Image 1 (cartoon, rainbow, N blue to C red):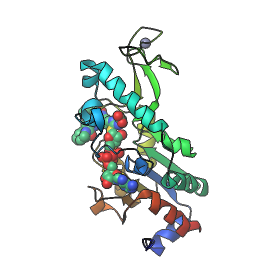
Image 2 (image 1 turned 90 degrees about the horizontal axis):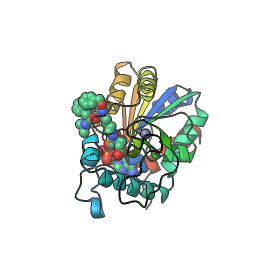
Image 3 (image 1 turned 120 degrees about the horizontal axis):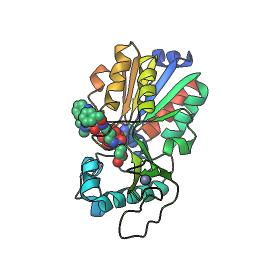
Image 4 (image 1 turned 90 degrees about the vertical axis):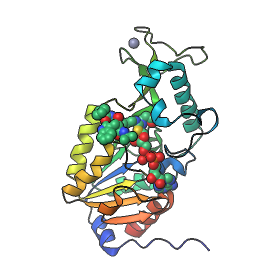
Length: 249
Ligand code: BV8
Ligand code: ZN
């Protein structure tokens, strides 16, 4: 018996039909139905012995650059092997149907852009981009079958993924645009994120404190749940298409 579609409150539906300024913040949960592990899910295989937060740090890269490089090479392959899911595509449709929509993502998997989202702020970088750890030069190509980490053609520095590691500050332009969007939106969606990593996790509260309606779509409760005006517990790949259907179907 297919699960009964979720009841979206008429108030929320009419609010969204009114074309408000909408911001959506996404996390690893929105890519889970594409087959990518979330940060919470235990890692598999040779990476099972490492905590993601440990590997995603300048200290780890300092200690063992090859280990960290290979971890991102493994994740880059994993991303290549998957496709956006109906949750990603529903967010593309919401963007196309609303006058003001900003998508803020913590994900480095590039799946939102791959699905067709335009106005995307990448708070934590993008795993498809590689740059020099020293002189910041970006490179499209690097030779991966070397014993050590590939080097920068400009300064011979080590290459690294263009992602934000724990303890590193976020790209200023992306973060400022995200804070501005959160503080000036009418509706703030928090989708597929555990709401633990800062400063991303504070954006929903910034929106709430400015009187925005906060909607949480997540598989389990989070620190935001008590503050949210609407909470839909479940899979974003099912709930977001249902929401689009309920608003514009
Ligand atoms: C910084 C890129 C200046 C790399 C990432 C204040 C208080 C405490 C700590 C701090 C603080 N300020 C700063 C810190 C330190 C730190 C931090 O927040 N630590 C945490 C662990 C407490 N923050 C930083 O270091 C940031 N930098 O602040 O710089 C500074 C520096 C030092 C000190 C002060 C200031 C940088 C943070 C960015 C790190 N880089 N990613 C990479 O990807 O390899 S973070 C990474 O982890 C992700 O990008 C994401 O942000 C986070 C994982 O969280 P989620 O995406 O939410 O995923 P998670 O698995 O946790 O949860 C998934 C959720 O989805 C679950 O709830 C699940 O139920 C749900 N779900 C699952 N399936 C589905 C679903 N929901 C719907 N549908 C489904 N199908
Ligand atoms: Zn360099």
